[in-house]
Amino acid sequence: MDTPVKLLIVEDDMIIAANISLQLSNLGYEVTAIVPRGEEAILQIQENQPDIVLLDIHLKGALDGIATAHEMQKNADIPIIYLTANADEATFNRAKTTRPHAFISKPFRKLDLQRAIELTISRMAESQALEIEQDRAREAPFILSDRIFVRHKERMVKIFIEDIFYIEAERNYCRIFTKNKEYLLATTLKLMEEKLPARHFIRIHRSYIINLSQVDEVAESHVVIARKAIPLSKSLREELLKRIQTI
Image 1 (cartoon, rainbow, N blue to C red):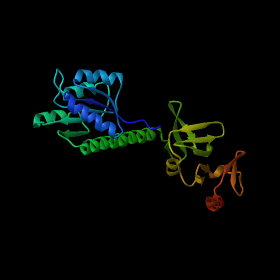
Image 2 (cartoon, rainbow, N blue to C red):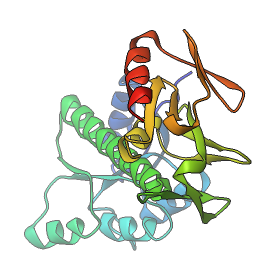
Image 3 (spheres, helix red, strand yellow):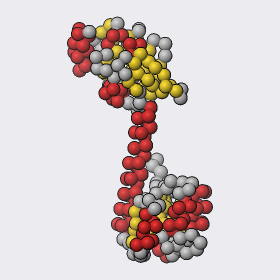
Image 4 (cartoon, rainbow, N blue to C red):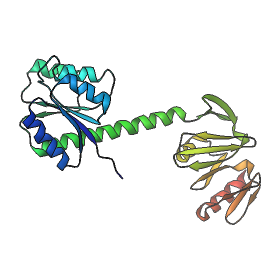
């Protein structure tokens, strides 16, 4: 079951806050709380961290909205959408230092609210995807002409290309099999195929890349490497046979 996006409303006008909460509920979002003061917002985040904070810039009390955002960001990286009736240039420039995802001017329409939240969610997804790609890039093997270096048990280890038997896909990971060991890498088979030297390796199945020099037998629907039968796609068999003949 999908979990709804959670929002915290920080607004000292309770009529406006209740109206926002109703609109958010109608749009399928979950409101974690409605609070009128920045100090209460900070406590709420500690107790029940939301995905997004709707934050009035002109809060009453010791902390206005911008000061509240700065305090929040000391301990949590939560996207902020500012609500404001009016903001002079100095206030706007102060608000920019907190890197908000959007500003909504009061009075606003339901569509304004919906679009601001959807854009924020889209940017959150893009940021998360970028972080995943960066993590994979850090885990990706470093390949030289005769060897590759891979991260294994928190350290980089060297594998000579001639020692690799085959590589098997495992969702967004892949496993490198050698004579004595196997290595799980946080990278895709497609990326491995792009990086490995083509003169040594060939993809023979959507889930397998093999080292041509390690092939012991080619059958109709599989190849054998070190007594392991590896599936061979019919569409890739002809190319494999050509490559073996030219070795």
